[in-house]
Structures are given as structure tokens and as C-alpha cells.
Amino acid sequence: MPTSTIYLLIKQLFEKKATNPFPLKYAPDDMTSAAELIEKGDLDLNPPIDVPENYRGKIRYDKDCCIGCKLCVRVCPSEALVFKEEEAKVKHYVARCTFCGQCVNICPKSCFEFSEEFLIAGTDKNAEDLIINP
Amino acid sequence: MVKGKATYEVPIGPIHPALKEPFMVNFKLEGEKIVDADPHPGMNHRGIEFMGMHRNPLKVIPLAERTCGICSIVHQHMYTTALEHAVDIVPTERSRYIRTIMMELERIHSHVLWAGVAAHEIGFDTHMHFTWKIREKVMDLLEAISGNRVNYSMWTFGGVRRDIEEDMHPQIKETLDYYKDLYDKLEDIFLGDPSIRHRTRDVGILTKKKALELCGVGPTVRGSGVKKDVRIDQPYSAYPDLELDYVIPSRYGYENKGDVFSKTLVRLKEIIQSIDLIEQCVKKMPEGEITSEPNKAALLNKLKTASGEGIGRLEAPRGEAMHYVRLTEDNEDVDCWKIRASTYNNLATYAPMFMGEQIADIPIIAACIDPCIGCMDRAEIVDIETGVKEEYTKDELHELSVQKTKDLLEGIDR
Image 1: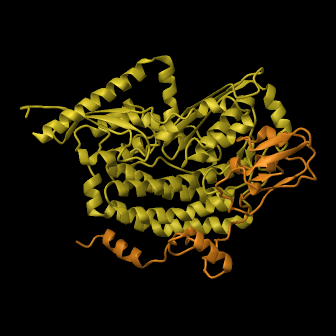
Image 2: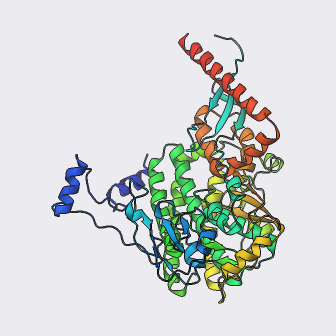
Image 3: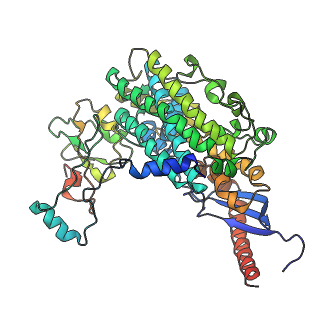
């Protein structure tokens, strides 16, 4: 019996895919050799999709303008910002950050801002690029 | 074999077939027919209220929205309004409209997602992929406005943190037009399809009397013809300025039956209602500040010694929900925080809906209240704290259910 579902099913077979493509079309057999090929530039990757305006990416911290008022530490919900007493600046653990942006809003000197960087996944939460101002 | 009326008790859950969340229902069966259903929540307690009570009020805003993955705006709004109520902060006029737009966008998102889940439960994966595909459009808009696809982090005391500027209006209009164009198709495949109609019509009936008795909320009881909607009964944010009416099946020429079909109808019609509300909001949005408390440092100091208690309630996509917040002078943190999610009310309506139905109908009936166990389950701590009996009953039930399963297996072997 031809129902509206059947028409929808046939139509969906030929429609443009709604999801964003993965960087690689097929999963490589071996990740290490694939990574080497990518480094050499022999493997074509699907480019990442542009992020929208006002995107909440990894937070940028301008250490020089920081006055050490601790306001950001007081509003950070996940304790991603830790105050360093000896230096009077803050240390930012990116792995703990929830990107709520309360520090961006409260900072009287506007030392924090959202960047457009989103490729921040890693296996080590204490890696060099995952702690700002270590 | 036992002759006559043999009743079997079958536990379904905590890994539930209908929900991707831990939740358990004990069914009593006579053959294929369900004669009793006993829901047992309390397997998803995360202690989010406890965490909130050890943080200052500003830190709780991002925590509150993490109560639920889908209605994060709902919990953020309720917490914020509860605290505003407690310390007498009045949100600005413009922020009320921005809040309303965001809440209605989330309602579209939630209902479209639910339609997909419901279709999946009765085996229509084509519909699921279709609805989840069209859901992306509203997610993109929410991301463009707030910067996040989920957990929007937009609310603050006295208003919102991100504005909806004039240049955003074309994208809002485009998204709403997209849903308007697709709406007829959505209605055609969900309400017009004969197979779906067979699976949903006269299944899981909740009568108007039962709906009122059990205090169900949201589309679950509106499908039975109960006129209950916080947006109209006790309007908040920008709703007093907007024109809206109760979405019940009889308004569209259908019977107020209270079955799964009626609930589907109500949810689909609410998508159109939300589109209309957003259009009204965009048209009427006043100029002005987006928050009445721009100095967050001063606000933080003010909240440190503030005292009072407040309630925030709203019509979530799933029905009425509520937050209670108490602040005291000697406690810098939130002194008390209580969440009552809509699923907690709707769970009671399971018993009459399951009665007399078949086992194969369990998933769709379980899904038809749009349950969100993650939202609801923190309510269980109260039961556990006041009486150990709850825990004991669960163990007992577990043993009982294991025994019953064994009995059932033996019965099959024979």
C-alpha cells in the first residue's frame, strides 16, 4: 500500500546528507600510518565546518592585563580557574572548562575572550596545551 | 501449566527498552494483557541539588541547566527566576522577550525530537531520521544565538547574557519558514499514515477524569482535553503580551481521547504555536538593556548576604516544572535548592495508561509522556532520606523480580 512513509523513504534515499562529513571518508586500517600520511599531505581531508559567530571555543587569557581580583575564580562553576598566589594570576584548566563564559562576562579588565578553537580533545588532561598559564 | 487466571509479574528496566535512561516498571500480566503497572524510579540520582547547595548562586546557573540535556533552558530559567523572586531582582523588558524566544525555540526542538523517538518506538526509523534531520535547523539557530548547541549558558540574574540583534532576525525568519513549509508533511506522516494511526489510536488512553486526579501536566493531559498551561494560567516572561490558546485536540476537530494519537497531535500543533509565538516576540521586542544587573561583581557581593526564598515555574515542553531556592544571610552558598520536574507528575499517569494494553505497546506508551528520568530522578532522594523502606522495597522487589523471571523461564521450558 503506498503510504506517505514510503514516499518519504524513497525521497530520503536520494537527498543530500544532513550530517557534516568526517575528516576522512573511510576509517583507516591503521591510525598511526594514516596520521603520518596526513602530516606529509598525501591524504585529502574534509575541511572542518566553519563555526558560527560568537562561538564558544577555547578561552583565551591575556595574562598581562590581569589584575588578580579573583572574580573569575569566584564565578567559575567547574573550578577550571585556579588562583596562583605567588604570581597573582590565574591558571586555566581547559579540560575542566564548561565554556559557560561567566569569567568572560565578569572580568573587569576583559582579560578573557572566546576563541574559535574547538579541536581541543586529548588523552592527557594535563597536557601542555590544555593548561593555560601553567 | 497453571490453569485459569495466572498473573505474571514482569519487570521492565532499569535498562528500559523505550528509554535510554534508567527507569523500571513492574508489570503484572495476564497472558498478553497488562493488568497492573508499578513504576519504580530512583536509579538515576546524581546529587545535583546537593552540589548546588555548596556553590554560590552565580555558580549554580551553569549547573542548573545541566539538570537535563534537552530542556536546559527550562531549568536555567526556573532557577534564575526563583532566585530573582527571592532577592527581588526584576529582569528587563527586552530580556523577557529574548528568554521567551529561546524557550519557544527549545519547545520546537524538544517536540521534534520527541516525534522522532515516538516513531522509532513503533518501528518507523524513516520518520526518526527525518525528524532528527529537520531538528538540526533549530539547533543551528540556537547555536547562532547562544554559541552552544546544548547547555546554552545564556541566562543571568536580571536578564540574559547574549542579545538577539537585528541582524539575527533574517536567520530566525528563515528557520521559522523552514518549519512552516515542513509542517504539513510532518502532520501528514504522523497523523495521516494508516500504520501509525493503528499503533497510536486508542492506545494508552488517559481519561480526562484520571488526568485531573493524578495531576498530570503538559501535553500528556492536554491530549485528554484538560486545559492546563502555565503560559496562560499564570503567565511569566513575555507571555502576558502574547496571544496564545490551550492546545487541545478538540480545537482542531479531533476528539479529546487522551490516547497516544492525541498526545502526538498536541505536540505537533504546539510546534506551530511556538512558531507563531516567536514571530509575535520578534515583532513586539522592545529596545533596551538585556540585563538589569550589569555589574556582576556588585551582584555577587549583594547575594552573599541576601536572604529570602523564591519559586520559579514555567511550562516546559513536557509540562509544568518548578524550582525552589532559599538564601540565608549567614550562608554564602545557596541554602536550599529543590527541583520538581514535569516527569515526576506524569509518571503517575502511567498506571491507567498501561492498563489493559499489550506488551508490545509498552515502549510507545512509556514514550508518550516524553519522560525525562534525568530531570526527575533527584526527587527520589527525599523518599530515601525520610524512610529506609524505599530502599528495602527495591531490594525485595529485585529478588522478587529475579524469582519471577526464573519462574517464567521454567514455564517456557515446560
